[in-house]
Image (cartoon, rainbow, N blue to C red; front, side):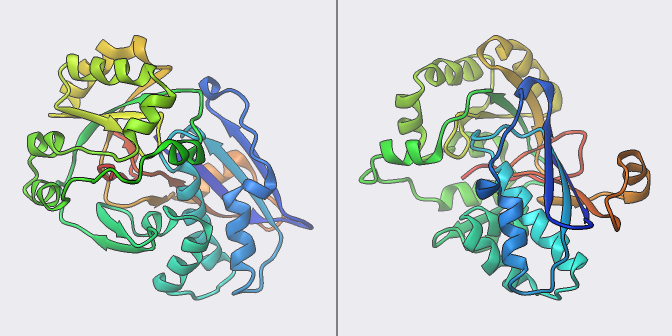
Amino acid sequence: MADDLVIGRARSEDRIDIDAEPWLGRVVVPDEHNLVLQAAGLMRTRAHGTPLEVALHKRIPLGAGLGGGSANAAGALEALNELWEAGLEPAALGSLGAALGSDVPFCLVGGTAVATGRGEIVTPLAAPARLTFVLGLSARPLGTAEVYGAHDPAASPPAVDPLLAALAAADALRIAALLHNDLEPAAFRLRPELVEAKQALLGAGALGAALSGSGPTLFAVTHDERHAREVAAAVEGHFDRVEVVSSRPTCIQWLEGPRVAEARGGAGGGIYAEFRSDYPFASSDLQSSALPPR
């Protein structure tokens, strides 16, 4: 599960068109809140930027705790660094990403990593080559600010070292047993139905389950794809949509352009950069990225 982002040169002013998978309904993101346009504005402070035509196809729900907007912003930074020949090194792109949002620096690095500070310090980690998850998705967003507002900052999180060791050992059972999200109690208070949905995942045989980001998406760890599909089939009635997804080593996948570009048409100077972006999961049939949630 990943968004598609196509960036090309426009003749006059910036323009962005957004469409989405039918189950998401009509997706509206005001320009002032659109991280792709914000990324373009930041890149223009470092390079001579031409007007842009952007097409964004959403598969990742808005306000889902999956960081789709952050992944799109990271992809836009990488694409514009090439399109405008800015020549920015990864550290400079990371600084721009941190100005856009706490998750963007991770999305520029991808894979499995520990993010510290405000999220701008990203340390890659050893992790299993592939983990398979079930995602329980809601069409109704849950605002990050709302969840943080309900969060009790006095609660002490568990030590992270045991989880890091489990990841390094590629031990799915240990990983599942150590899942923790500080924001889960707050999200569950705001959306009590998530408590039952999590129990449904565990009751269906998932190795472990937890909230992704600030929610409302829930994820479950499974043995393999066959096991994941069994769990997914058992919990369909508890979510608006259920996806089987797998971990990937990067957050941005550049697509081979000519075939897809011709199908979608050019804009002014033509399509230059087209890629899929995803955080923190990607579907099992896409070559994009994922990491076990924090």
